Image (cartoon, rainbow, N blue to C red; front, side):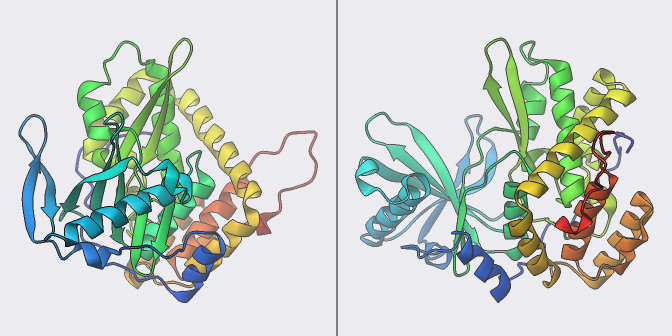
Length: 364
């Protein structure tokens, strides 16, 4: 795959419809500890009485609003939101979180899920943390679960009916990283370019779309003699929805052009291809480690309507052409296409000379 930028912004569907959770997915979530009773729901939070635009430290509109509720309703909501944070962090050991308080509730009208962002503060040291409450969208939940199973990242989330609770994904938003961090001399240029190639490949293999710069973060971890980098998606609304192959390749979004040119400046083609193969190998191993769970997830995903028939038809034709694999043309859903993409990954894996047994392609 040529790692080239697109000078025209790739347009994706901003307001994708919310797909409700079907019984099969709900059963999967319950079986794997993702469904539980919560003291408050998304619908409860919509009944706020006051909202004030939230601006950043430079006075710019953040597209978030800080909301408040009538007293004493505010006290009940604050207590319930602190309890949910305790469930996320300590599995409900309340003695460990009795010094925490809900400090602020923000609401965002931009995007698909219209999330609430909850800020929790530690009264002992003023340390802050966040989590999110959103509408439960099947597309997003499949995206979260695929990220959990197929990437190096663990995703912590729960559902309760039509409510989704997500842990905050820590990192520097991609657009902010591009503006303020790319030229930092402490960041090794080749290491950053390598992570960009691997992130691009992960998104394409599992069909995660709309990875514009503000939809992923760069996690920077100091190492003993350098910085380690990891690029993580934080928006999963466009999991397997768009009908164009390019929608699943971050390199084709104009907001990522500087990152793509950075890769072209710091990697030769052979090295970029090496990093693509490294990501293939890692994902193949993750598939084998979660074979049963992944198979069940993909079976449920294949039975659900997560996009429109015309988008499914266009994407299966483009993927069949890209992979030179007619099996994609048999796909009837986006879940079928994800399953076929992962099967292709396993079948294309190069076997070492001393391992004569071929890969089992029914593992996905």
